[in-house]
Image (tube, rainbow, N blue to C red; front, side, top):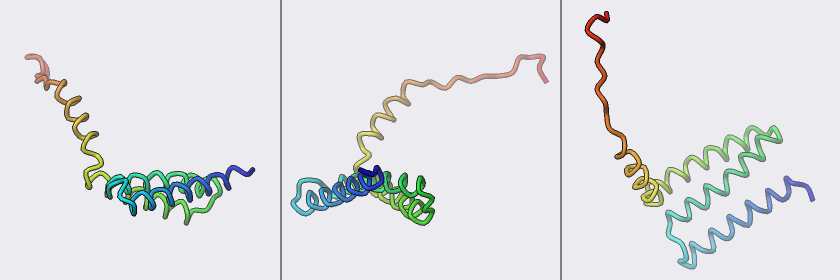
Length: 102
């Protein structure tokens, strides 16, 4: 089977599954936006590989929009928390020039 057809089937299946889970209440809206981001990434890749710049640009824009909605809808809270915890380990060090430097 053609890999491009498999990619189309995968994205359609993810879209339908995400929509069904949202409608039945199995996932929250922010998780739905995360699933839609995952739907747009293979579409972007497919558009890029086939030279379809319109499809690639629309899918890239959709992925960016859905990722932003996921991040601001609370989906990225765990990621934000881990980033802050990782950033706390670093300490700022003041570096001054030696006395004779110009």
